[in-house]
Amino acid sequence: MPTPSHRHCPNHPKGGHGDCAGACRGDGIPVIDLGVLLNGNAEQRSQATHELGQACEDWGFFMVINHGVPEALQEEVMDACKELYSLPREEKAEYIAAGPKDPIRIGTGLFYSDIDDAICRRDYMKMIAHPEFHCPAKPAKLRDIAVEYSAQTRQLLLELVKAVSESLGLDRGHISEVLNLESCFQILVGNNYPPYAGLDGVMGISAHSDHGLLTLLFQNGVDGLQVKHNGQWVTAKPLPGSLFIITGDQLEIVSNGRYKAVLHRALVHGGQTRMSFVSLVGPCLDAVVEPVLELAQNDPQGMKFRGIRYRDYMEHQQSSKMNTKAALDIVRVQGDILTCESTPNNSTEADSSGYSPTS
Ligand SMILES: O=C(O)CCC(=O)C(=O)O
Ligand SMILES: [Fe+2]
Image (cartoon, rainbow, N blue to C red; front, side, top):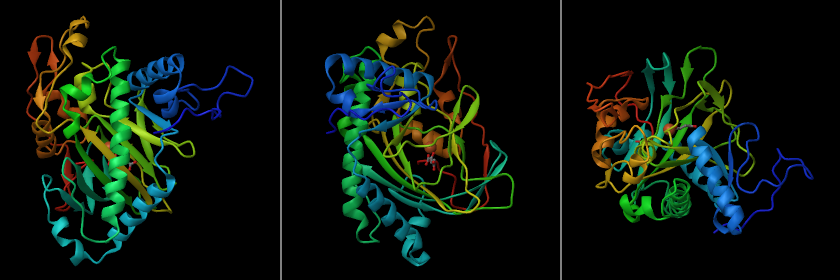
């Protein structure tokens, strides 16, 4: 586990207003120091927990530093993924033919999304890592690396969920218990965006929110991830050594809307291949996700979402091919009315591989 970092925040000049105990607003995107959050003294921890809550509330997105995931392991997982993409098509055929419910899936091709009125050009490999671990047989080294990477990032994300629970004024273990996170669902996704120059309206992945609780993401040094903040798209530029954290739909539901699942998308680069690697945790697939009662009771608008089994939520999201936050509408309560609108189909596949953000 990380230790408290005495790293000086680049946005707080030495001798000025101080060391960045847990988070700071730097170039706008919040930064959370996991070492401080977990192992700081009581005052530092409480400050960092508050800042984590603010980050989830204001942005639904932040960078985590001093997280303890070795850079070498990140490189290994990215390299193994690169090898997987470069295997001959026959070696990946069973995964390319797989559907959204299959534990391993490879997608490749072009998709038209009318959300962004853009052609999306993205290859991806998705594998379920928990509660059961699945992995393509080749390249042979992928399995050990992915086992290690999924275990380390799962531990990190579950620690963050505990701190998030505390930031909502709940017991540290509350969210983990009600969502049975010992059996949490976890997927790893490798995204590969070949360079695409010369055509306007081409992007990597169009605007969407992730269906889980928290998503951890790092990239190969090529920027392109954008998050929607105060109505504007902000390009996320990582601090060296940091990892991105994205809040997802299930966190919006359990927090009764206090923490928002952030809309995000990825652009392609004109001259370089962009790669990103995602580790997402969600509730146990059979857990019914609903707002924590205490939070709903303290909210003048009451309960904002009805309960839904996480498995059913994901199936709904996948079947309707939605790539914005519209999936949340099936559980959203408006006034006293539950919205059960027919689901818009706003992405058109240009091939058979299916649009599938982190799914
Ligand atoms: O590649 C990125 O930066 C974003 C990927 C993403 O949002 C996803 O896989 O859900
Ligand atoms: Fe995403």
